[in-house]
Amino acid sequence: MTTTDTTRPGIVDGHYLLITADSHGGGNHEQYREYLDPEWRDEFDAWRNRYKNPFQDLHGHRRVRNWDDEMRWDEQETDGTAAEVIFPNTVPPFFPTGAVIAGPPSPEEFPRRLAGIRAHNRWLADFVSQAPERRAGIAQIFLNDVEEAVRDVQWAKEHGLRGGVLLPGRPDDCTWVAPLVDPVYDPLWAACQDLDVTITHHGGQGSPDYGKYPGAPMLWVAETNWFSHRALTHLLVGGVFERFPGLRFVVTEQGCSWVPSTIAMLDGFWHQMRAGRVGELNAAPDLLPRAPSEYFNRNCFVGVSFPSPGEARAMRKVGLERVMWGSDYPHHEGSPPYTREALRRAFSDWEPDELAPVLSENAAAVYGFDLEVLAPIAARVGPTVDELRVPLDEVPKDSGSPAFTRP
Image (tube, rainbow, N blue to C red; front, side, top):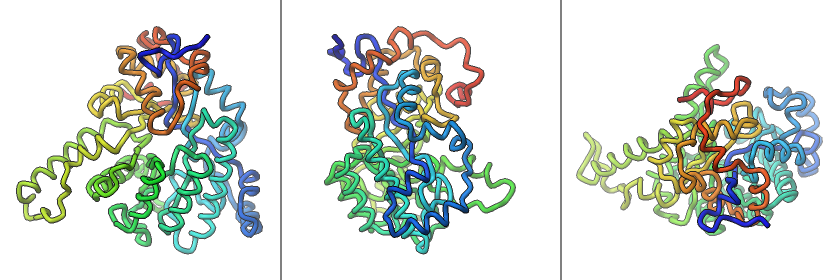
């Protein structure tokens, strides 16, 4: 009979229970059409006939893993994973590119793009319902209209998307959407707090439009993390967690080594301002009553995808109760199908009591997984404690994951 470890719910019969706090999925255009409001289907058909998919991992057989239930579980169980938090991956109706990295819609685009994400959310609710104990789906929202965003939060809660909502980035060149520090979003934060809905911000969001210049793709890669980090900074210093102390906010697939220095910098500014001023800037009237680190340690979590040894060490500085491991399935840069090897490279010198919270227990608390329900799956597919204690001597040569190339 399978039982959970009495002292560590994330370890079952000597096996780690793995919950990836970062996986991706979505429907194809044929599926999304069925979930669109009927009045948009003719326009969608015309748009679909002109659309060319830009993503290699959404072509051919590989794209099927985004929506094929049996294939996803076969691949993830073989890789050791028992449960997943699902971010969007495919291209919803009327989107210019993948849902995670697409910029905010213009006022003219907003109605049809809103119809597109609602089609995705409906698809996701049905997809999650095939294995609700193993999946936490994250719904999409837009910031163009706060009332509509609140409706989508309520819909996600009512339809079992306990992963919460994906907070979009707001690039500085997007002048028609208010910045995240604007109190105009207070009804959205209030709805998430009152409904116990987690807010997650994924890497790749918030970058400006770099145009069609030769260096634009490399600029995006070089700077995207910086722009993605800004959501955490804006919510911390904008007083969101002071006004809404019950919020849960997660930043995912952005690493974590930047977090301690960023929080230390913000704390330093806060203490300087509390003492009087910073240079010529006197910000005392707007100063929050608590240091940014206090809000971070109360309200915030970090999803660390395919961590390297350096990122694993940084987790200790962030706080092991605040970090969650992610595989980034099914992306090329994710750790599958070599998650066991990636975990050995990053964590072979860790004690089980340190590693179990990172691999599942924190994600269970943030996203509402029942570890007892998942225990039999972990005992069947999870990597063993002894297995992950063995240092990795040679990295897989056919993996594209930074888990094996970053120090």
